Amino acid sequence: MPANPSDSEPGARPAAVRTAPPGGGRLDGASRARLSAVVAVVVLVTEVAPLQYTLVATATERIGHSFPTVGADLSWMIIIIGLVGGATTPILGKLADIHGKKLLLLGCTVLFLAGSVLCALTSSWALFLTGRALQATSFAITAIAASLLRDILPRRHVTVAVGVLATGIGVSALASPFLAGALSDTWGRRSMFWFLVVYTAALVPLLWAVVPESTVRVRQRLDLIGSVLLGAGAALILLYVSEGEDWGWSRPSAWAYLVAGFVLLAAFPAWERRTSHPIIDPALLHAPKVSIVLAIGLLANVMIGIQSYAIAYMAQTDADVVDGGVPAGLAADLGVPIDNIAPSVVFHGDIGYALGFGLTALAVHLMTWQTIPSMLAGPAAGAVAKRTGLRLPLLVSLVAMAASMLLYGFFHDSWQMLLPVGVLFGLAFGLYYGCDNNLVIEAVPEEQQGVAAGMLTLAESFGAALGTAVLTAILAAHPYRATMTTEGGAQTFDIPQVYTDSGWTTGFFVAGAVGSICVVLAVVMKSGRTPATGGQSGATAT
Image 1 (cartoon, rainbow, N blue to C red):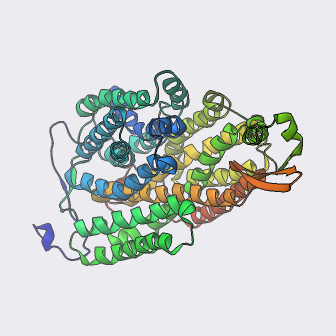
Image 2: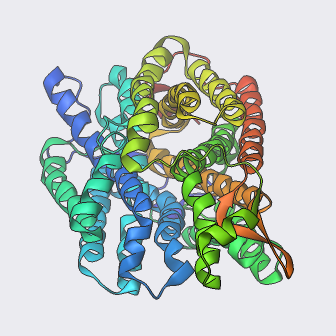
Image 3: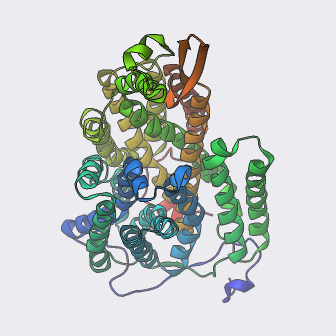
């Protein structure tokens, strides 16, 4: 191996070296209390990603009141998180491989903190979006954290710890639905970001003091051209998927983003084979033990994206408000009593799914019962994998997830129907996320853990965005409509942002079909059939 990384052969695997930072290294002789503290701090740090998303997504309407002139562009406060996070995570993961995983984890956490402060203080829409872009580093936090635990924990604890990391300890999933309502109702939209500031600021010194640095480094410099190809290509495709419904999926101007994104991503592996310092080993990226995991990650997150969007939307739609609000609005526009209008309005379609839940009711009746089994299933997947391998819990998770999509399609007319299906989905969700990063840990050499975890996060980001886009397109074809008959004739119109039961049913069945593809991939997958080693096999992979 040449001493200078730039002298290595094109496409050659970069060398791993070990350093000895103060307090760094694997904690083989540490007490159970020390190990528990390390895992707890890392998990609490990774909770910022789902916490910020849930808090902000559930309060989008209230935040919009602070920026009344942005109109439909309000959705960018959500889009920019997936766009920036998905595009930058593999690059930040590679920097973690080069410079140290704890260092990059701290850096991303501080950037998230800065973004939260900016969002809390500003009244400018441009600065608010800048703050949200900084918060997008939370995507990389989870990917880097998994590879850091792989490097510092005793190998016998890695698989279970990564399972705990995947599903958290309840700060985000259990608390955020209640926090969102309480904070925004009492102190307004800024209070949510101040909460994130306080939460993150408390964790930064704990992360610095409690968690050791990894001793694993890759002797390599960052491939800037590959970074641009990967980041820009991913960003363009994510932008098309996120905005295609508003732009028009088939418009040439919209297609330009998609085509340009694919061209850049197609150029990425070609460049990586030529350069002496690739972001990730091209042969490894194309190996079935990695490529199948990435494909499953993308497709599984299509299901997760559809479920996350659909259940919250359906449960918070209020049938009485919709059916009563339309005649009331028409009466107000025409300046006549509502009693004169109501008999002439006929609705087309079924919205029996609409439960009229607020955030608290949604959390109490549905989300809590989905979250608890998920929290238990994540570490359980790791424990099972130590005996049977990761393929078995992954396969069980995908079968359960696909089945839950089909059950949602048939049974969604009451919270009593949704609750048991949500429990099944929660189990599947926890098992899946207890396996995904662990599969990467088992498959990838230690010097490429950060970037490989980032590639998985990118694939999963694509999947979630694609699932939401597919569901949105399906719903657009199934609007809830009304006809008003007057002396001048009948007028039929769509009721904005309300969709018929058949639209949601179709969306769930499409998700179930995607799930069946995931199951097939898991069945044919050769990796994950031997007991998980906590990265021992990946450390010597070629």
